[in-house]
Length: 423
Image (cartoon, rainbow, N blue to C red; front, top):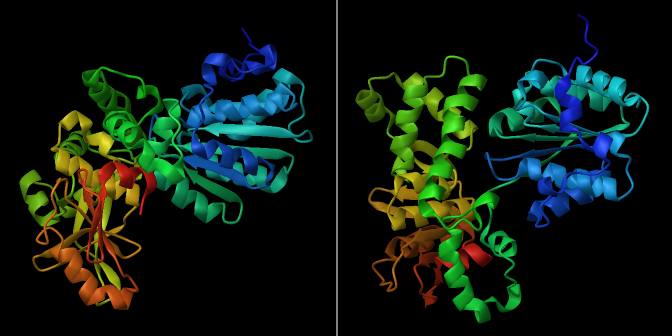
């Protein structure tokens, strides 16, 4: 029998067409910092692309934006939300969904002002081509896109959507955002007055970087959540779907290896021998893991050549929360956290001399100790003496457990302070 409901999911996903508002449980009052930026730029013509790790709150931001639009007077019938986690939506081109939208609502998508939200767009095989066509031919449609895979969203989009898109990375909660979610207000300029509160809450923050976990008290649940809601869906579902033929068992072996010991040197020859796999296969696996926001590679910067070397690159978890199921030592967790918070792309090594990270060429060393000696800062000092003038860098940082101060031109900063205010 012929059915007129060709897409049962679309009207279910867009309940505000009938209910005239977004359901309250989908719109928490607390908002991520990036929400304000995206909202402010809604008036721009460009496609807005929001990308990031699973469970960081991309869909929630979309619902909050839809809620704001409706409250500002936009007709709910002029807001279309497609979530490509739904298999039914993946099977059709975006243009077909818009035709179905017009059939259901009576709104002509080719003529009337629309807001089109495409959630987890990377799961729609033709999303880039479809979005480009809509942008170029229907200026009445404002398009917002989210995705959980970095390279698919970024490299493919930046090639095909050059000049047409604005990009926003939604990361796990920052320390400041965590405090905001907890309802704790700290004056940024006078943050040292709140030191006791900041130190206490920092230990809570380290285990709770996802919005859903902010008030979770069960540490064993947190570890299970990270494994079952973040890591395993990426390994078992996302990567095999995106890359046909991906070896799931090999993915699991390598992710377990590097998340259980972040900051390892990437020694492919040795890894290939141990796993009895070719280097080309391992390169592919590492690409998949970087693609999916599971790991991040740090290159060895060579100031004498003003270039980075892929030899002896180091591999970290994209965010230290991904190491929680593996119970890594505190020092390793802290090092991974400094890598993430500093957004470092490089470290420095010459022979036996090494500095953990370079942030805009500023050397940063992690020493999770309460007492720092000159021996602890010797390679930071050496780097500044040898390359400081050439790189126009005058000071370095050692990130400590709880010690503040200065040794010569090296700043000593507690980890909590570094995460709260940066360098």
